[in-house]
View 1 (tube, helix red, strand yellow):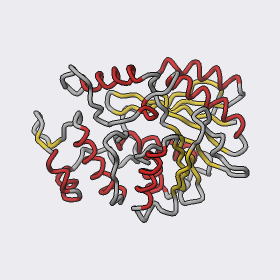
View 2 (view 1 turned 45 degrees about the vertical axis):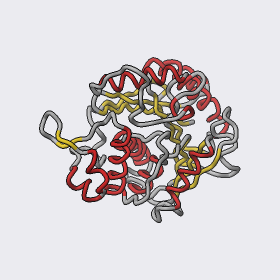
View 3 (view 1 turned 60 degrees about the horizontal axis):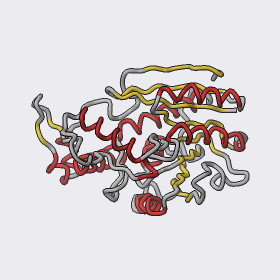
View 4 (view 1 turned 90 degrees about the vertical axis):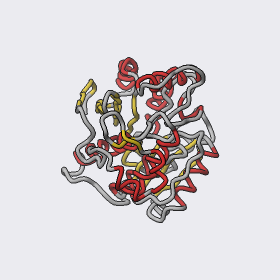
Length: 303
């Protein structure tokens, strides 16, 4: 890891990602019959769903989590973010690669690996995938009490997750690690999918772009196909302010966390982050993930 840009650019999902192949909708429907109501044949005569329909996306996610990750209970309020599973799995697999490079080239598995997920959300998606794929222990943080309650219900109603994932409420919206990481507590990795937008209006514009890309009409008030509330989608200053704050705060916990990381949506924000990371004497790199037409970056640093 160096004090400069190091991009790992792949054009598809991570090789270990279970979603590298097309969805087998026949099997998924057998596993979750409620999905059947949303499956249709597209113009290429292949089975699919309407990805602009939030109910269809939720049903697909439930079926994927049940089929691939043994999650029997997964209920989310319609107002909460229901994220695309393949992309979320990629983040987990890439941090597993980083941990592998630092453990004699053997993928570290089991509950001795402890991950801190900043802003877990009601969906609790990263802890679910990380634990079910690698057996890691997770602490998730959340500023929204209802979201934390929903995440806890998912954990409590899936026996695989009960003893390996916990949720901590962040009482201060100004802090990220402070008030969460306890004295003498250590983590192998911190991960984060930050609120990317800096306002409700900007988030709405992003939704309109998504709908247009899906070939949908964009008149009137947009419906988020993957849902999402204020703290999930936007914050004052957007990802630039959020991640900058995260970097500065991480300095105070550099002896308690081996690696820090976050997703970065906007490429133009990388240069300011590099400037801050150099200022705090951190080593950093970028892992670039390409999923279809979407590019997402993992910003990774350590001290």
